[in-house]
Image (cartoon, rainbow over all chains, first blue to last red; front, top):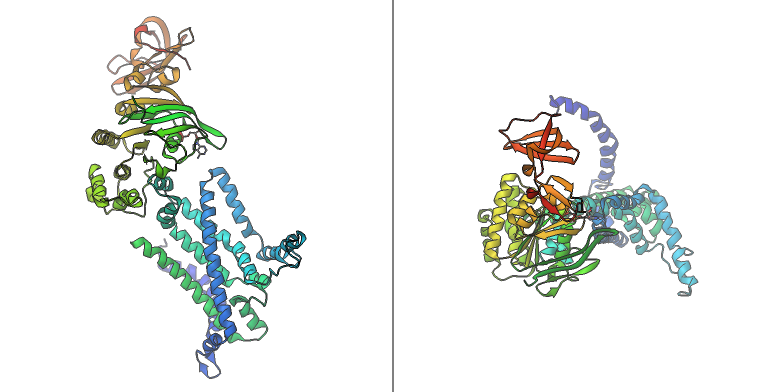
Length: 275
Length: 319
Ligand SMILES: Nc1ncnc2c1ncn2[C@@H]1O[C@H](COP(=O)(O)OP(=O)(O)O)[C@@H](O)[C@H]1O
Ligand SMILES: [Mg+2]
């Protein structure tokens, strides 16, 4: 595109300097904290981190919730995306806009809405107690379920968007063709829709998994100190305990998990295709 | 003639839009029917309903003595070749053809797939990806994929319309050969009257979701029942007969240069063998043509013409 390679480099230079100074450097310093102790370079912070039972619980919970949110949003996402692409073009645009609408509302506002619904005197409990089904309100907030619901609501649109665009790229009559050749709906999904939308699933899955793992506001509000996740634990270590070593370890774990999730999903997608 | 396939008062709607209304049609075993009609008249919708991709809001579909109206596509033993081919891009040609056979765990799968590929002349392409094939080859794969299932009826929805003219002729002849060889019952959809005339045992002409006329290619070509049917098969001059019906002439049937009527040349076009004219006359618009060798007429020129009764088609309805 540029006649001279140097022109391109020169144009990229300001952005590169900016990124290096303001992003890579601080992240590098923070991450390097995790490989030090009083005597110099060491893996001790990692050993200490995983030695704590509470930390392991938080680590596994984060992994579990992120995987669960990604899995459930894939199931709901496929159903919703298929319904959307089956609509006539005119209403498709409207429904698609409805799906993306939550993305334009502040995550803080969206998460606080769940307090109104799930709180002790919230909508759900008022219904349950008011109708006489229960004597005392249920504890819905500050549970894994509450965090799960909050994260699902937060990230489901990303999965739906990824899958809708993947499905729009499928050959128009592939699904009816498979049905006429004798496929039931399960077979249509497994043999046609899934293989043709793998890339969308990888993108959506990575976004939802990584997003759920690194979300802060939702676990902070709906999980609080009772249901810590890595991100809320990180914040707590820094602000309460001034423990930068643990914070650095957590940051590294989050980063490694995000990259691994993406690689794993990509691997899954291409391995099947090569067959 | 026993009805192998029968559509009985079929009404098909998309939400509130009625696409096909009260369609009756019966097809004999081994017959090659073409469904002919302009775009939007409900041909594809009818195919989708026969294949089970859409549930009728009224009426019945019977195939080989069995009422299949409420059955899913997988239980109907119907094949459907789509205009867009609808091959599976993630599978090889071989796996595309094997797709339906695998689903029903057919015995002799390999032999059947190889046989199917041989029938359409694609034996050497088994391991290719569909996207590496030409349009005509892709269409053959789609045909083989349906044929190997040995359906009771094979539906083809404008299967040739994405091909260029030469390939279209070649594929058409191939389809005829396959139909003769297998004796399969076929419904071929097209908006091209020449294609319909060349292929069909019987033509069903559709208009706005209903059947306008059914007949042999000869009947459809020479004895249209209405202005619409006449216009569709090339009767370009259509005039009322004064008794509610109409009279229609092909351009070649109009005599130019002599006769009791007089018209003004409004337009002219050279069409190789013939030269075509549009005349404005007190009777209405007349479309005529002359051999290309005849002296050309100028635009604006007045010319005498005759509409010989004996060469007109008599239409029961003018519209
Ligand atoms: N998915 C759909 N939703 C709504 N209307 C449709 C749909 N498909 C077709 N139609 C309408 O039904 C009528 C018949 O369409 P179709 O069967 O595709 O016609 P053809 O195949 O003869 O061109 C048309 O008026 C068309 O606009
Ligand atoms: Mg059509």
